[in-house]
Image 1 (cartoon, rainbow, N blue to C red):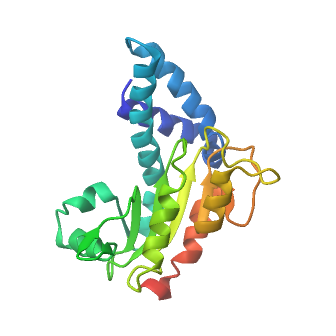
Image 2 (image 1 turned 135 degrees about the vertical axis):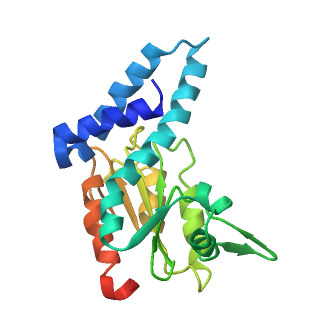
Length: 224
């Protein structure tokens, strides 16, 4: 089982469950992980986990892009990633790259950006979305880039969001929040969780709220 097979399975899962699929994504991923392990042979559990982690990261990005494609097309928006912006193949992406760079003295770098949404009219970047299956003490990475973007006039308008199934329940509790929830909720513009059982808040919402919230951000008269 490879990434394309998992994505094909997700299409069937989405067709079966509709919008509810976004709150059942954890269940889908658990099923796929079991099948992944059963379909591959590894020398030990560590190698199996590493192979799954490598696969699932790209799968989650592609699933999120798949869910956003129609929205972006209907609103005159482009969608790309930092991987495509490292060596942009078109003048359009070259401009998007310049509009997202942050500076360290004489150096400029791209922030970690799993998904970048931008205006097709002026190539201004509107939203960066970070996609993570779990955190493992890496919850400070995305807030760091949010703070760097906010420190420059050219990028301070960019919203930074997180999409995650919160596999390790780092974000689920509001009453007794872990450090990851505190930091992400405070520093980011929104966190969207792809499961049913978690404590919601103004900036911690269900995955199914992502597109309605993006619609509010990209009012037609604002980005044309």
